[in-house]
Length: 526
Image 1 (tube, rainbow, N blue to C red):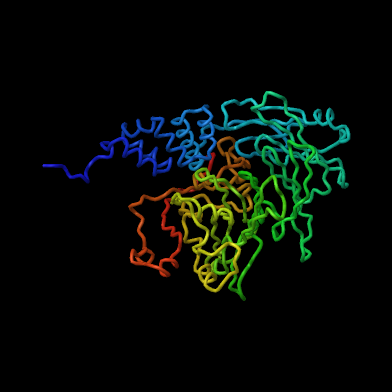
Image 2: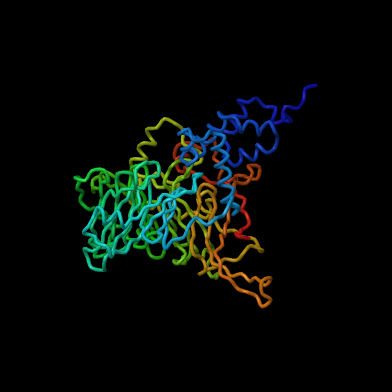
């Protein structure tokens, strides 16, 4: 009598079958599966399997870069990705130590830069070495640029791809401010060197973004056609001193608060900008709000090269009122696809006439006309993990027609779990700390939000009267995909195989019916 084929154990399947199964799982689920038995655990120690896993699920991660350069093998890279994401999602760090002392610091893409007097320390926090690269910026300026003088105030602005930018201010007068770009690449055997020093006309709302070869700095000092202020960006070449570029004014990018109403980033050869303060379309109270997104090649800052998409859906009037103080806007890279996504944190009154505010983290994908053209010419199948921003087929720059308006009015991001992460909580979760929240961010790779809060703790064991001490703590909440067995499509959204022609064309291109398991909010130190 033959055994029931449905009762076949997973560890009895051929290696090729298990290899394909792991190819469709994310890294977390793969390691959880490997904990069920020794055979599956041994498969995750095999280089070919881990290489497939890392290249399909975390191709744009730092660990994949190390493995691709031969500094790690692929099983080590997969394990490091899993451990890093788990530590972040559970607020359970591997270690905690004092890196150094300084008056100011910036942290970007795993690198910490901080001031200690006139000494700047640059340290890669993802590497094994605990030794930072140090240099005295005042000595470098005095040796190379005597016109700046001694009595200048220095401030850190931005760090990316080994390039650190600083602001040097001698006084509040115009012409006494300079932008300084320093090459601090730790992989170089040479000492850090100054690549560029640029006099600034204004430092109002100064923002800097750069790649390895190009640097952009912008101020909110332009004037639009309607008389409102607009951003103006200037390009500086870091490898060609003779290159001259005209400034570029970003029209209709109305947000003035970087990180709240507007965000900028340089990514894969393009300069990106997104604003959440533009384009309310509708009549009367039935408005629809869109993000205003632009991009252009980093080596060609001209109006002719500018691409615009003002049709990335944000919210509509039925979504309630926003608590503006809590709005955070950022552009973050997806480790899986390498795409630059809009990530926005909002606190809203989603239910009318109810005082309770809901805190939600949203993410949206930016597409431009050239991207749509490439997708249509690509013969490969679309990724099943890639969300589309709206369930319509119209081009990004077309007018908002009546049919499209109806589609948008029926579109609700809060019902799209892949794009919205609400701060679901349990009755015994730590409360939200309001104004004590000093920093907020969202980690796409492990679907986790993190707050740095100022808390007060009483140590009655030290003093019977009780000592109240203010301290900083991490507040973390995460989510993960629920088992597929618990996911069911409602009957009204199941596509019919008999749908043809116009009926099939009207169906949404994307239907997110995923379900998630939300963790309890955790504080660290506990």
